[in-house]
Image (cartoon, rainbow, N blue to C red; front, side):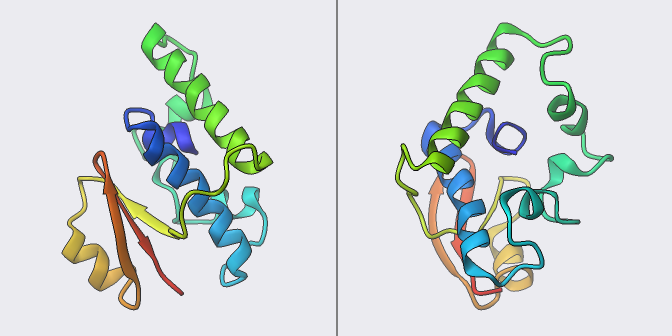
Length: 131
């Protein structure tokens, strides 16, 4: 998931994305209550939608991959593993994020209307929301 959502983003954004999944698990406000369940919950993470251009890249990240893409996969994996294991302390209370293809105004009105904007890291915007 981290690779699919943020392979071109700074490491801090990757850490916040990984942390946001743990925050959803801990919040108990989601249908799923495991990392696996949160990540694969319908409609939540675009790279897991079969119609998304990133889908094939996350299903088989090394197929026809450049050395830069392979390096990004390993870095994403390392960050996710370190966040989940606690080697890196969860860096954020974010529960939601979006990239540059979505406007902040649209996202705040339609996805996190009761939420709070936290920070923009690279091209990723992070929010906390109770919903």
